[in-house]
Length: 375
Picture (cartoon, rainbow, N blue to C red):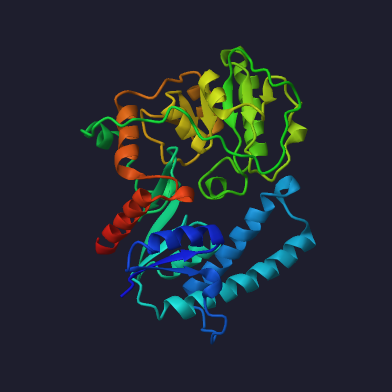
């Protein structure tokens, strides 16, 4: 009997999941387009109705995050709300019609935070176990975790956990993977970098990292305001600030490029070069912050990040604590940093990029799934 179902919502996920399923008889794959198209609508419980409203609000807010002024026009938002209500209601009914009668005790989801995967996870959280997939923060790795991904992952946050480890030292990557831009983004100035600077990577405003895991920075325009105020308040106590926009962002930040001479945009610069040449890195919760830890740079985080570990980075919750942190930055402590990275490389992440899954990677993933099934 096939006891594990890997649920895909796009073709790249489906292709990857089918590679995994081909290596094990107890794993099957379902694309969301194959959920029942015809169903007898069931009456939604109060909990399911609340989930419906939550998902509609989440989808609307995500759309707002990609709009000028971070808000859709009135009528556009009304129409989107109706569309999202209907499509979410139909998906919930299709999911109930399928999963309520299928015997799979373990369901695999990509990320688990996008709206369709989130619906499946929340509808059946009391009766099924889940395993989540995502890119690994380490170059050439993938995440396979029963707790979740990123901030909701099972990665321990207690420094004593790592300090007590006796793992063999891992060979860590020295080169980062540069992200390819989905649109052409340019700086309004030269590519020259200041002699000394703070590096701040922008993130995607509509990404889960900002929408769900950033309690006080709600978008990159607000982040810009915070860092301008930071520089104006501290003056020469901190160096100029260099910003790089996220290559996948749909938002247009060109209006910010010339507003402050001490906050400059360098979108064409190499991210690893920006990290290595910076005095320290400030991030909400970007993977760039983790990469800075990997490259042994001081990091200040403004949001919820899986690497928010005392002694590894400095986590702040408001503008005032950010000002204090920027005057007292320090590198990640050793041996905490080394043992944290050794654990991720040797124990936590699955070796291999899921986009280029080889036999070794597939075997490791099947082993993780089988272990989760029996847990």
